[in-house]
Length: 71
Image 1: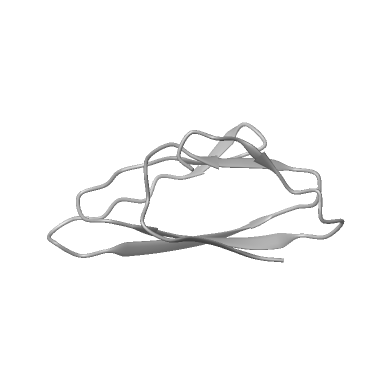
Image 2 (image 1 turned 90 degrees about the horizontal axis):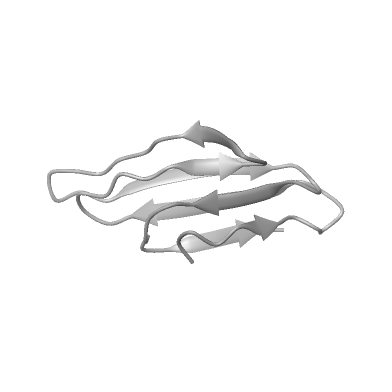
């Protein structure tokens, strides 16, 4: 969910993939550091993926389409 901070407590890194709907600008934060500022426009979806180290927190500021975690 947008604005919720999650913690990777799996014991290993995970890959997170987020699909943004049209005309969305957001911040991706890992352990309090903004690591990406993806945006979608012109009727197209944008997909961003990032690795979250074990023990790190992560969040996405704006509502998104699909949010998947590869654990």
